[in-house]
Image (cartoon, rainbow over the protein chains, first blue to last red):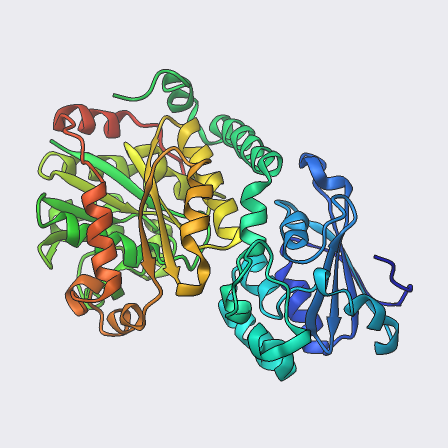
Length: 208
Length: 256
């Protein structure tokens, strides 16, 4: 997926992708966001996630590391740690080609709902979306949103969980999250004075 | 007998307190249940259980020379409920180290202890309920951050010798395709899916009315799901003395 370089409107490190979605929606941004995880512990930290917006509404997602588009790209760009985030503005015409790639599209509310877990923000985003994007695929005709992994589904975006399923299918990423939490818990056991608990009940020696 | 469960999620807004009280009421049909608000920094169990006006809370018990724990135990909806207060000064004066003694005292006289836990893993006091419990019930929503934080809770629990009793998907809508998500999630969690609880206006109405869901809307689909979850939890027959000893000997944080 090739995008013309836009005008940088914001560049910062954020801990939660929610900030990005709120910012883009509030600015009614037409352009794109580049998410670059800062956490080298995660295996796929090498790739970058790209999410485009039309008038503040998420439109297309792509991940440069996995080369996947659409809802699975949202799972790919989900990271445990902070992101370097760059937000760019583009003239709408520069996004037309990219936005025509139906297989990369994500439903308007999906990033807020699945990537961030914020139902209220998802509802706000859906309200801001043009009506043809928030309608179900059956009525949206050729502008139908892709339904990842759900052949036959025709209930529009609410029936989509492609991003969550793609996340759960990524065993390496889940393992990385678990490894990181485990090592954090062990480090903190010392810091918090839980060493007794941590060592007394180590693996293979469950409390009974 | 007694078994202690921490109801935890790692992320806010998943409905832990609603779930704690609903599981408590459902389990109370068979067991003697005590519910403790162990989220000492952001108490809200009292609002859910209609205890907003009570005189003595867990905070009053946790201060030096404070009230005996019995004074903070309220019999409501067939359970014993121990709420926290919302006064910040009380919270600051409270010493979480005393929680182990409180739980040990309560353990002597109940079958099931449910610890409503904080929605964070960032402090010792927040993680303490997970350390004290025998098993953890992980409350999830079908979103990436909720699953990711739920996995972290499980890793912390495992690291501190606490098993996973199961996962509970909350706020599930018809469109969430939970029948595909739950089995995929189960591959990573040590316990089964105890129930999938539908998103429900009844839950919000119950909260507004200061009543647990199972009291406010016992016939709702959400209430039925919590009863199902309670049936799926086979409570273990722990020896009260052993459990009490473990709480007393648990290493506990110095400050909130």
